[in-house]
Image (cartoon, rainbow, N blue to C red; front, side, top):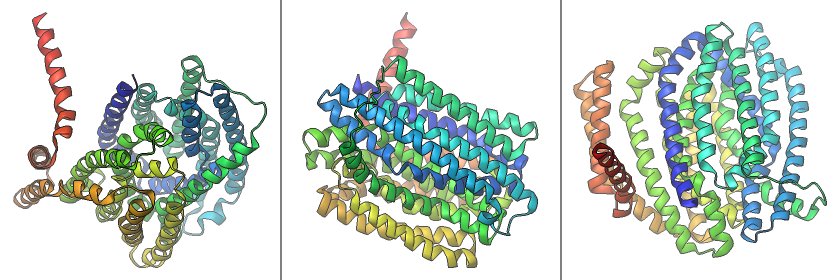
Length: 511
């Protein structure tokens, strides 16, 4: 059953994502035109500032699966109940603190955003911030139930609920935008949907998983151990906030909401790109923790990292190279000429993150081995380098400058230093990993050349030629990877479900 949940989790993750992408392609241009570039930038700016309150979780959420796995291997149900109770208490307190801290931020909106925003924009920003703070504060205690679902590997329910969110959110947002409520309506709709999802998780945990809580004998020793473990994850969270949100804040301070809007669209494309990778690796988190807890065999962990990494690389290289070839006409058709600068910004954000994305299962290996401290400090210094580089680059080159600062810092840290640590300290064989990844590179050349030829010979700014070029590129990529890149295991991953579906189809026809 666990294997079925893993496979179903991956399939549903990608189904949800591709459904979300399809909806986004239709919804985003409508939303951008109904909101306007300035208000879209304002929404992104406020969201990036409120997201810093997420640091109040101190990384405890990521620690849950590790400690749950420890007790589950030993079948210590009472300890699991105590763990659940401890996390619920801690995150409830964090939610209250977030609400209080957010109230202070709302009262000081003018000081936070400076003089680049108009009086009307500041008034809207204050309302947006209040709504988003409430949304974030309630999500803290609710996250305990989502973590429990993940730890129990109930991916079918989790991913189906995610699909509901993917479909419902744009429909609700579109409704409120058509009613004229602008960015405030977006924030309210998103908050209501989040609350509905949280309640669904709580009901599922109570009714289906029989989740138990024990609030007796608060284990201070366990709390101390979790705090030490989570402290370095907390450092990672600070790093992520700097790397992915400080650029928007700097642009808002020095360039205004229009620059934030252009950067925000590129960041949205980058978030889609990153989610393609985590959809696969996220379902292996409990498995990695079990492997480390029972055997801690570096050879098996390397093989798992490589197997998942190759699949991630094939998916990401399809999207990344496709964006490189067809990204400029796509953004112009999709978002409009006002967002043309989003194309180079998106490339600068996406290309450097490809290296850590195909290795993100290694993060879970580090955490399971309690060896994530080095990565936390490394990423902290990467973030500082990003900040130092981005400030002068933002002033001189705007959004492109801020993305360039991020790209340089990430390439040096992830491409070289982090791989050294994986190999020589964690014990993963990164020479083997990169040898297997580079075997896919020749298969990538043919589709890229075909894509460049298509864009040279045809006017891909017209929808018909764009769609035809994209189809040719995708088919060339699939065939090239099948015959030149994939190994037997990867071909079977695709062939077995197709054969099974074909047998069922033939059986249905003969009935």
